[in-house]
Structures are given as structure tokens and as C-alpha cells.
Amino acid sequence: MSSTQDAIASAEAHSAHNYHPLPVVVSSADGAWMTDVEGRRYLDMLAGYSALNFGHGNRRLIEAAKAQLERVTLTSRAFHHDRFADFCERLAQLCGMEMVLPMNTGAEAVETAVKTARKWGYRVKGVPDGMAKIIVAANNFHGRTTTIISFSTDPEARADHGPYTPGFEIVPYGDLTAMEEAMTENTVAVLLEPIQGEAGVLVPPPGYLPAVRELTRRRDVLFIADEIQSGLGRTGRTFACEHEGVVPDMYLLGKALGGGVVPVSAVVSSAAVLGVHRPGEHGSTFGGNPLACAVALEVVAMLRTGEYQQRAAELGDHLHHELGLMVGGGAVEAVRGRGLWAGVDVVPALGTGREISERLMERGVLVKDTHGSTIRIAPPLVISKEDLDWGLEQLRQVLR
Ligand SMILES: Cc1ncc(COP(=O)(O)O)c(C=O)c1O
Image 1 (cartoon, protein in one colour):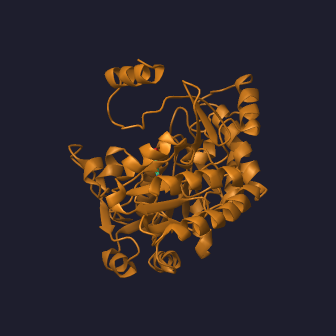
Image 2: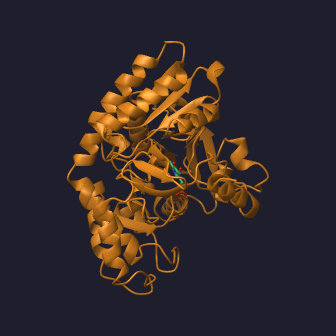
């Protein structure tokens, strides 16, 4: 057996089958490229679901991590450490907000937002105890905890994980009337992805996010934008909300905040909202640790220059132009997205998203399918135009 087959057989035998990875075994990576255990190279057009916006092995991020590894990596929040305040201050500044509550994974940031919004509802808005409601959108993806899958509409994510957490109302994405009808005096928050990633890179109708902003402001409801996948440069702006001129009450960040090096997530908001937490009411041993802060500080510094956002915008225009030319030619039904992020609906007769992904893999391009015959494209923002064009050419060949 090849080393690839050995590694896959061993993983199948010794790990839970909660994923169905493509049959490639990566052993190293650099920039937008990955190399497998047999020396084959692949263009990474997924970028760890946007966790690798700055590319694999980004020198600035690796150097920041290495330097911090030699100093101090973990204190817990029982003590202060000397990277924490800088990280919180600069991330809050980048977001135009006042306070940060750092966690580790995206799901933890979402959980933290749910707890914060409920607490704000009881302590500030005056909602009766136990009555707080949060409005979410159908086809959302916010993570995998028991509470989060309680408000998922994906049967696969929910099956056999009950009993589920109550307190959520699900409305169709993009439907303002439905949201308004679902809203009561006990509604504390609306939680939305400004672009739904896992659902197939769904961009809401123009005007929807500003209307949600106006409605939530009028009804004294928090607008929580889950920018864990859409944020930090991916769409050509720091936040996807910016495309519609919207500033939410809370940003949820994760993935690229840790530069693909360490898991770092955060809730970023005003002092009026995050100020509801008191010592002992919420926390995490690793949240805001020195290593995480050192890497994320460098991520924030890189985003402050605007160069990654600009690159994503320019290369994104090119990507969407090229993908647009494929629509209607018998192979591609529709393309959606913004910046260096696209959902491509392949004509089902040509194969499932999985089959298309496998054919692309054989040609040296790694992407991930989502529902049905949709594949998503989200290369690292550092990809060169030549490499992007090469990847697109492989897609054309596969769809021919
Ligand atoms: C929008 C969004 N929110 C939350 C999450 C959960 O993040 P994590 O997998 O780090 O828990 C994801 C992951 O894909 C996501 O796309």
C-alpha cells in the first residue's frame, strides 16, 4: 500500500468518522500550496474554511508565534499577561468597538454571544427571567455545540443530539417581514452570518442587512454578525457587513484571527454590551492566552494596512469575472459570493460536489463541496493571480 493509503486506513481505524476528507494526506504547506506525503503538490482553494486567509506558513505569523513560544505561552486568566491588553485594544480598534472577550474556537465565540445577549436582555433590557429569545436564519451554520445545533436547520447536524436548547426562533434568510413578525418584547438578539458560508456562500438580497440593522435598533435588539468565516479580509473588506454600510452591535470573529497557527476567537462589542459580564460568570482556560494574543496581534496589524482586503477585492473581481463566464455554458448553473469567496453550483448531471472535488484533487486543486452539487472556492488571500488562473483552468477542464 502507498503511504497515502496507509495513513487513510489508519485514520479510519483509529479516529471517529465525523468527517469525510478527500483522500489526500498533507505533510507540508507554504503560501497557497500544500504537499502530500508522496510529494505531490496541490493548490489550496479552501484555505481551512478561511482560517488561512494569510496563507500557510506566513512568515510574519510564524515569527510572532516562535518569539512568543520562547517567552510565555499560557498564564490562564487568573493573572494578567503582557500581550493581553494590546490584543484587546487593537482588535477593538480594528472593529470600531470598545471591548473584546477572547475565546478559542468559533463555536465558543457564538456560545459567548448567546450568553452575552441573554444576560444583556435580563440585566439591561429588562426581559423576564428565562424568557429571552434570539432570532436566527434558516440554513445557518454557527458551529457544533449542543446549543448551536439546537437552532440549526440541517438534519445531519442535529440528528440524535437532542434534547435541544430552547430560546431560538428560525426565520428565512433574507426575509425581513418574517423577522419582524418573529420579534417580540422578549427578543434580545438577531444572530446572522452576513454571507451564509456553509449554506453555499449565499449573499443576502441588497438592503437586507441595513434593514435588519434599522429594525434591531428600533426594537432594542442586539444585531450579532457572525463574521467568523466572512470576516478579516475574505470578501475584500475587513468585514462582510461593510459592503452594506452596516455596523452590528457585536462581531463574532474566529478562524483567520489565529492566522491558521492557533485557534483564536473573540466577541467584539461595546462596553454597554460586554460590560454585563462579571468575574466568574464566563471564561475559558485558553481564551486570550499569550501565544494566541501574539499571533492575533500580528493578524490585526496585517489587516490594519488594508493590503489583504485590497488584494481580496482585486483578485475577487477577477475570480467572479472568470466564474461568471462559466455560467450558462452547460456546466455551471450559478455562482455567488464576494471577494475571494465563491459558491459554484455545478449542473448536477456532471456529478456531485464531492465528485467534482475529487476530480479537481486529481488535477492538483483542493476545494470542498457543500450541499448537493455546490463547491466553494476560498483560496488564501496571498494566492498569486497566476496560481488562481491555473486553478480556474483546472475547474474548466473538470467541467468540460
Ligand atoms: C460562520 C461560522 N460560524 C461559526 C463557525 C464555527 O467555528 P469553529 O469550527 O471554529 O467552531 C463556523 C465554522 O465553519 C462558521 O463558518
